[in-house]
Every structure is written in C-alpha cells, then in structure tokens.
Image 1: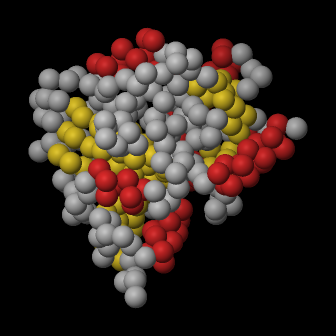
Image 2 (image 1 turned 120 degrees about the vertical axis):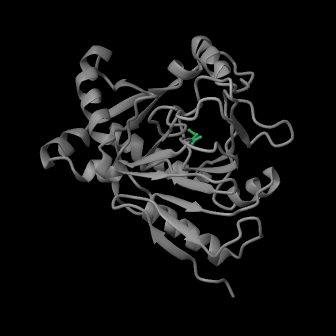
Amino acid sequence: MAQPLKIRRLAGALGAEISGVDLSQDLPDETIAAIRRALVEHQVIFFRDQDLTPARQTAFGARFGPLNIHPYVAGMADHPEVMEIVKEPEDRINFGGGWHSDMSFLQTPAIGSILYAVQVPEFGGDTLFASQAAAYDALSPGLKATLETLSAVHSASREYSAQGHSAQKRKGMSVAEADGYVGEYVHPVVLTHPETGRKALYVNPAFTLRIDGWKTSESKALLDYLFNHCRYEGFTCRFTWAAGSVAFWDNRSVWHFALNDYPGQRRHMRRVTVDPWPAMAEQAREVELARAG
Ligand code: SIN
C-alpha cells in the first residue's frame, strides 16, 4: 500500500515540501494522484534527496501528461524532452532569470515543469515562485471583472526570435533547429484552473506582448501595473536548492524566477515540461473559444 505523503507548507500563498517518496521508483497510481493533488493545491511542490537520471525524470514526468519538446531550446541528444539548464562559472546571464510562466507562448501551454538539481552553487541560485491565483484574489472586484473580459497575446519572439536566440546562446543554451517562425497565441488574462476551478492571472513579463485587440502602447500601462502587482512578496515563496532537490510547479497559476546571484560558480539543472493530456487541452481550447465569442 502507498505511504501517505508528508507535506509541509513553505509560505502563505504557495509552496510545500513533500517527503516520504522516492521519485525514481515506479510509483503506484494513488501516489501519483496524491502528488498531483498536492501540486494543484500548493501550486509548487518540492522534494529533497532524490536521485533522478534523465530516464527516471522522464518516466516520472510522463505520469502527469505528455512531455513537451521545447521548440527553441535543444534537449539532451538521447532524451529530447530533457532540457539541460547549465550556468558555467564564466557565464554572465542565466536561463529563466526573469519572472515568467513556462511555455505561455504556445497555443497549448504546458501545465507543469519538473526541475531537478544536478549541481548547485555553494551559495545563491535560489528560485522564486509567485502565486498568480493569490495575485488575482487580491484585486478589486471591479478590476477582476474588467480583466475577465480580456485576452492577451503571448509570443516567444523576445526570447527566441533570431535576436533572442543569440541571448539564449549567451546563456549557454543550445538552440533547437526551429523553423524560424515564432508565432503569437491568445490566452485569457484570467485563467480558470481546469482542475480546481480557482482563477489566476495569466500574463507574464517574458512572453505577454499586449492585450488582444489593443495597441502595444495602450497595453503597456495595464500590463506594467499587473506585472508589478503579481510579484508582490506576499504572493511568493523561495526555494534554496541542494543537489538532488526537485521542484514541480503548476504553470497555470505560478510565475518563477531563477536568481542570478552566484558569479563564478556552476549550476546544473535538468527540466522536463508536462503538456496537458489531449482531452484537457481540447477542453481548455473550447473554453477559450467560447470566451472569444
Ligand atoms: C526555468 O526557468 O525553468 C529555470 C528555473 C531555474 O533554473 O531555477
């Protein structure tokens, strides 16, 4: 019989550390279901002292949905779903060093990301997380009602267009052979979580370009207001890594930010990114289409 998970909350808005589970094992369905419940409830969950090869990390991630192959960042040669996120001692900029929600620039954004620490710096290199559900809850009824009528345009163009690609290379990331086209996709500004029904803001500074139907200049004041509001410290938690730590976050309600405060040291992480099951993606698209009228 599966052991119950031990769950310890880390902060008021989001985050919990889970112990009593070895993610390298072929876990029973009820343990996977309990991890999924913990993920959607706490929005980001953490595990310590894990030992995950790329194959084991892939096997664990695939229990939650099909794994994403990043369109612009090359995965490992023998595990294309696994992205190596490495900052070498001589690198100056880091991958993920700004508030964002993974893959919001796709038509069907990823539901979650699972990051495993292979090697961490002696100090620094923490990751910050911010609950976009808490950010939504804190808004006035008037602004909530207005935002519910809006959608926003997301794109990877700033990060992964020809210009963005060179920035990725400067971050030490190997760039995938993309087709050169970085598309734009529209998502509601307020996302209703398909599993909990809880609402969250779904715009982010890295990938949201503008409010749909508005000019970029018109969108700026509202987006700047939201981006500033969404990172208020009361909505955040902070995770200090050790080798073998794992973070699993829900991209539908969480922003994250990899801190770049460990000059001269090496940090090596591996990430798999979980897409929605096709039925869930279909449902989300129908809701989006209905909203768009
Ligand atoms: C990411 O943005 O996926 C990377 C986060 C991190 O390295 O802490």
